[in-house]
Amino acid sequence: MDDYDVVIVGGGVAGLTLAKFLTEKGIPFLLIEEHDDFFRKPCGEGVIRHTMGYDFYDLYESKAGVEKEIWNTVIYTRYGEIEMEMPIVMMDKRRMEEELAKKGKGGEIKMGERVEKIENGILHPQQLKPRLIVGADGAFSMVREYAGVKKPILGMAVEGYSQNIEMDEEKCHIILRDDVVKYGYAWYFPKKEKWNIGIGSQKKKYFKEGFEKFKEKNEEVKEWRGAFVPLDKPTRAYGKNAILIGDAASHVFSAIGAGITPSMIIAKIASDFIEKWAKKDFRDMDFSLFEKEWRRVIGKYLTYSYYTKSIFFSVVRNEYLRHKLLARMCKSTTEYYRRVMKR
Ligand SMILES: Cc1cc2nc3c(=O)[nH]c(=O)nc-3n(C[C@H](O)[C@H](O)[C@H](O)COP(=O)(O)OP(=O)(O)OC[C@H]3O[C@@H](n4cnc5c(N)ncnc54)[C@H](O)[C@@H]3O)c2cc1C
Image (tube, rainbow, N blue to C red; front, side):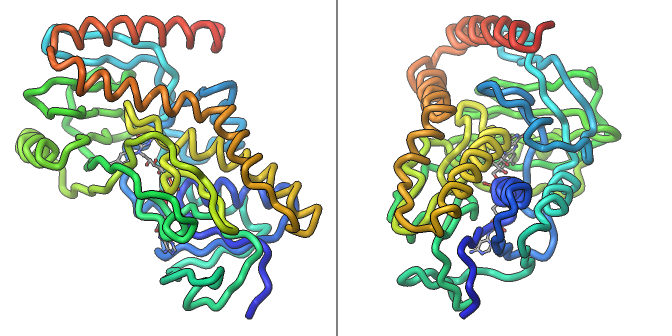
């Protein structure tokens, strides 16, 4: 058996960000990714730039793949348009993942290899028994199952590229109407030369209905790519000799389905703990401290986002009241970002 102290399962944004930080700290690791290329998991490619005092550019430390910086988002409801100021960085996510992998070269990154099962701490078929397993293996995480953490509630979303959108290309656009999709929204996000457009819902039935109409309306889109997104409260992010980051632990702002920034922030926090554990040769790792820290930094906001989503979609069924509530939320978000970004 090869001797790796740290094995990361999954090379999406969460696993690769951790690889980058471990490289910076000089901690060896092995990352195993089942696909042999990046960005296989669909995404809207819009990154919330600033969250809980963390700036995306500080975490990412590169401009590779940055396509556009957007300040304004327009939300269209049945009762009008609501404008919100929130910094969003539109990325080429494939470039972004490639760049993170480059920055994570301090460890070994094995592409095109899948972990098939984990039993008694042994990863199969690799026959590895690391001291620490990091589950960065997405919404259907096998590491989460190994750690004994419950499955998440999943929503569904699809995305595709279009060049035919006649909307202001300096803004992100969100359609929040029950006649477009219930329990979800459609998005039109401008990239450099095209648009990333898509639709998602918490509920399968409404997702299917909404997607059929959306597809018809946007028939120029050549390929639709769909995936699941965790939409519940963040779960416990550890168990046995494993910790979880990213979608594997539902580290997603579930009101909007945004998981990139939370994944990166929690990957950074994980790297700080792994550094401490490495100093003691991975003996007596107290995972509850990691749990406490990520919950302190961002966990409560992820939970708040979950309750906002529940109130918004399940309690407030009337679209007019929803519009009014949204207008208030957008106003306070705008004020928050004006304050923290000093605009
Ligand atoms: C359609 C859609 C649009 C979205 N749009 C946005 C958006 O605009 N902004 C935003 O912030 N968030 C968005 N999200 C959510 C966001 O994409 C995710 O939260 C984020 O990508 C999570 O990253 P991750 O690394 O945790 O998981 P993933 O990106 O799913 O990466 C997990 C990786 O693990 C690998 N893997 C899984 N199992 C194994 C195994 N057994 N062995 C080896 N490798 C394995 C997978 O191949 C994958 O590469 C969207 C989600 C969807 C579905």
